[in-house]
Amino acid sequence: MTVETGKMAPQFELEASNGETVKLSDYRGKNVVLYFYPKDMTPGCTTEACDFRDQHEQFADLDAVILGVSPDPKNKHEKFVEKHGLPFLLLVDENHETAEDYGVWKLKKNFGKEYMGIERSTFIIDKEGNIAKEWRKVKVKGHVEEALNYIKKNLQ
Image 1 (spheres, helix red, strand yellow):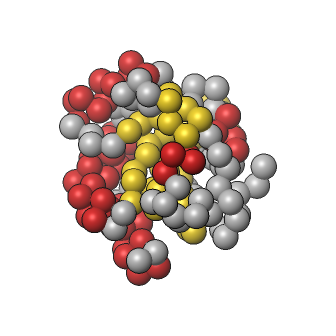
Image 2 (image 1 turned 90 degrees about the vertical axis):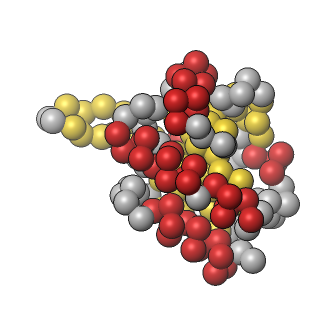
Image 3 (image 1 turned 180 degrees about the horizontal axis):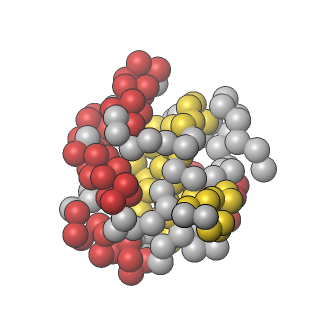
C-alpha cells in the first residue's frame, strides 16, 4: 500500500496503552497527528513524546488528536506514558502491519549493523480521513512545532 497526500489514510485497529482498541475511524471529524517512532524510553523518542506532551493542549485547541505508534508491547507503552505523563495514547504495532501500511517499516543501519525498524515519521490526517501532510525521516528538534503550525495554517 502506498500512502499519498490527499488520499485516504490506511485504516488500522490497534491496542492502545490504556488497554482499549483504537481504530483510525474512531477519530473521523477530528484532525489526527499519527506519529511513528522506533522505541519507548530511548532519548530521541522520549524527547519527541515530551514535545508532543508539552504542546498537547494547543493541538487539542485545533481539534487535533495525537497518536503515537511503535512496535513496543502494551506494558512498555504503559510505563512510558506513566514515566513522562503523556496525555495521549500510544498504539501497539508489534507485528508492524500498520507501519508497513504507512511505508515506515524500513531497513536501517546503525554502527554497521542492518535491521528492520521504524523510520521516524509523522502523518497529519484531516477530519475526512485523508493524508493532509507527511514528514519522513523526522528530525526531532522543532518537529512538533512544525506539525502544530501546519494544522494552524491549513486545517482550520
